[in-house]
Length: 121
Image 1: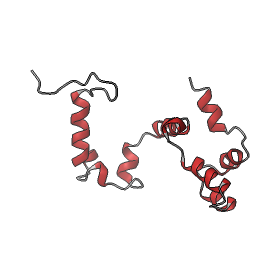
Image 2: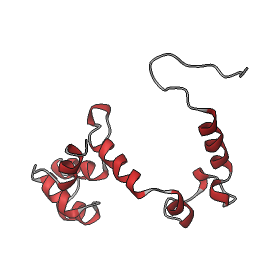
Image 3: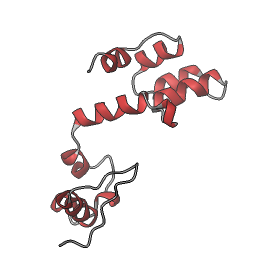
Image 4: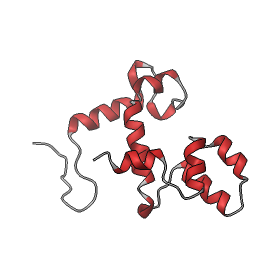
């Protein structure tokens, strides 16, 4: 018998114990690096080893479609800042994740990513 309580309420579901154990281990020492995942740089080699690029793309798609929940991508935030006159267009385009898609979004046109997300299902 386990001492864990199951949450049957709306909201987060109960995670399987092996998933929790793996997360617990990664917080202390991810990928045998001797450093916890929350302490590693997102630009470091260890992070690159554990990051799945395909999963990252799907996360961006979820965020892009998550405006209802208050989420937005970096490029969506840049578009809003340019439209509000708080950031210059050329500066925003230069630092955007995809300058081409940024320009399309700023003009209100559909981007390649939006088309890909729409037909991903």
